[in-house]
Every structure is written in structure tokens, then in C-alpha cells.
Length: 297
Image (tube, rainbow, N blue to C red; front, top):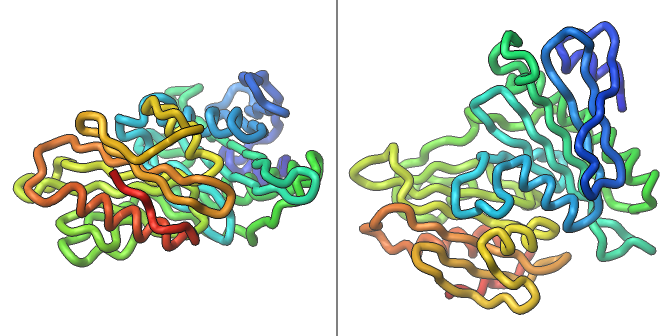
């Protein structure tokens, strides 16, 4: 860990102490605090399914994909990763490294969580400012570089992270004006910045007569997170076919590194065609990620 950056992240900590964090399924875990002050930085490194499960759990998406989970934004700078856009001051960063050589077809997943809730007297939004998000991104990138070397992953890494989008970058777009993750979707939408390297993408279609209410929630999951996302809604990833179950529909696409899973959760009766919105979302997302045309239900 880059202790200088960690100390700045933890509000100018003078000294750091390691603490135990849950090791379930991980290759390595690390927790850092400054004794007597708010804030905990926890780090986990894991392979494939175990790492994806842990990452989706941090984002509130493991086995509860039918609910919204935590909004995410792309890390950018060429990294296959996302960062949470929470309202509670906590920040989660997930980076996926596509290995090569002897580790080809494997993914090394690095997850970091900066959590201020150890001390309720800590400042609100301690880890969600633009400066802190960039700092967490740099810590994550350097940790991923070292993990890449230690476990012989041989992944192509991203560049230096200068800035990471935040909650304010998740915006409402008027009909026909979307240019992020909801591009091509009709109606008023809430979207995040789009990035072809982001392994998770979301788009919310808002109700025409009540723009504060989400009528249709759309999500895209790319390897290595697609398998766990599919399991979260009871899909058999080994023989997955597009389908519908009540208000939930799912689609797939063949992508570099495996199969992507797309989910559409209809929360309210939609006056516009939910299937058309789902088709537009999956098509544009798949194109950004270099995938085949999605197979829809």
C-alpha cells in the first residue's frame, strides 16, 4: 500500500494500524485505520467468482440484483473498473484485471472500501469529494499494479487516474438528450457517464408523469461480474438463454472474455415500450464493449 496516500485519504492520519478484515475467499486482505480516528480503508484481492461475489456484495448487488443496489460510475483512464456513487460517505472501488499467459482466462479482482462509519462523529461525505475519489482511485491502481505482479496475472493495466466521476455525474437527461449509459433509450432517463471499459453499467427510465419515480431499471454486467449477476436472479449461467420472469427480463451477448448479462427490472407500469428501451440499452452497451448483438427475450 502507498501509505502516504492512505494517510491523506484518512484525513491526514499520523500513523496507521492494520486491522483484520473478512478473508473469505480472498488471496489477500488488508485493513488500515489511524487509531482513535474515523475511517477504515479495507482492501481485498481475489480470483474470478470469489472476487466478483465480494465486489458485488460491497455494491449491494449480490443475490439482490432485483433491487437497485449502489449506483456506480466508471473509473476511467483505461481501467476495467467502477466506483460507487453513494450518498452515505462511503466509497467502493472495484478493478478487474484480465490476466494473460499462464493465467489466461482468469480475472484478478481488486476491491477497496473507504468507510467513515466506524466513527459516527467523522465528517459527512469524508470519502466522496472529487479529491478523495481520485486519491482512492490512485491507491487502487497502485495496489492493482502490485497484485498484478505478485500473482503473475500479466494484465494490461490502465493509466494514471487523475479524476473519477461522482454522484453529481449521475444526471437526469430529457427525452432524446441522453449521451451516457442511457444513450438511445427513449423518454426521460437517469444515467451515468459511459465507458467501454466499465464492467457494470446502469440506466434508469423515469415515469413520464412522475420523473422522481423509476419505472424501469436497466443494468449491464460484463465478465467477471456477469456470472454472479446472473446467479443473483437465479439464472443458470452454464445454459443461460434470454428470458422473462414476471417483471424481470434478461438478455445476453458474446463479448471478449465471456458472456455479458443484461437485466431489465420493470418497477412501474410503463406507457412506453419497456422492451424497446431494453433493446436500445443493451445494443449501445454491447457496442461500447466490443460485443456481439445482444440476444433479447
